[in-house]
Image (cartoon, rainbow, N blue to C red; front, side, top):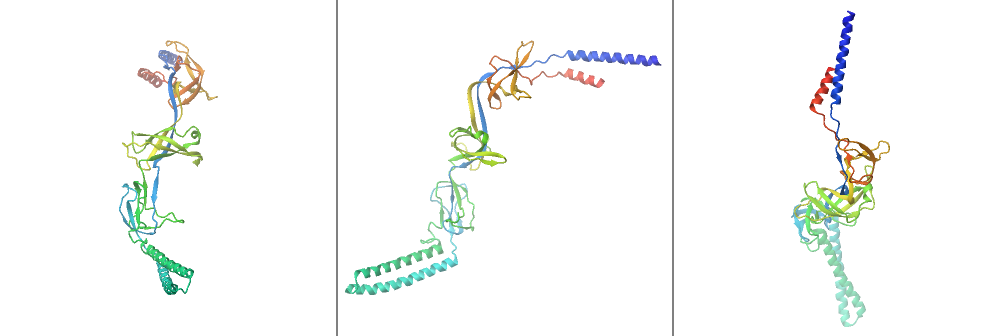
Length: 383
């Protein structure tokens, strides 16, 4: 019995040794990994940033009434092209009862004062013609009479303004809301029957319409404080619209805010750019847009693909592996380098490499063959 167990153990050991030998042979029969290489090259490189924002009209005018009342009629719609002086809406005046009563009382008082002045003037004129009173006294009486006439005119005019909206009646410009500039009506936030308040020193008044020239648009956006120092007024911008795919607008940076605004823990600076008109694109006010700005640009510099870079785990300094052997016998050595600006694809090489160097593409290896994968799986299963 012991002999049988002994033979079984010897057989197991022999089979294990054979399996190990086969596995070792297969493992060493695999072809060695061959790394591809690439060389630095001369190119131009730009460091860009993207500012998010929107397109807005350069000049946007709000039309407000000069008198309070109710919107009686609206003649135009949003999106309509208007000329300065064109009628937009008409306001129906609803007079304040107390103010109307006071104005009527002022008219009556002025009429009484004028009648009294007229009686005095007529009586003293006869005396003046007879030479009883001096010309100075008569001139004073005539002045009082003229002033009473003017006061009555003013009182009647005020009464008409309170009652009808203007001294000239319902066709006056006070009740007719007209465009003050040429452009497109962007918004009419009121409807017929709405009550509106006049614009005065204490109240902005109700906006009847908003007008702007859509041919003069600007880009409004924000950039981070880490990039605003590299911007210059007059720098070119490339505007991409979210609503219009495949179209790009040219613009020039015209304003950089001197003061930043903190948003979600980061300081942002407002920028503005003049957008060049493109007749092939109809731009609506408020389109969301992204502006591409060139922060730094260098021409004819030595660059390599950024994917070739490696970074030291301790010092975080960049390095690459440069070929020192032949194509048949690949050998590589580490070489520390100094890099400059990057555009996210290529990076500038300041020092450490030349165009003749061959850099290891360390992240590219030969794929494992299907047969080898099956052999390894079988070995794992047997084990």
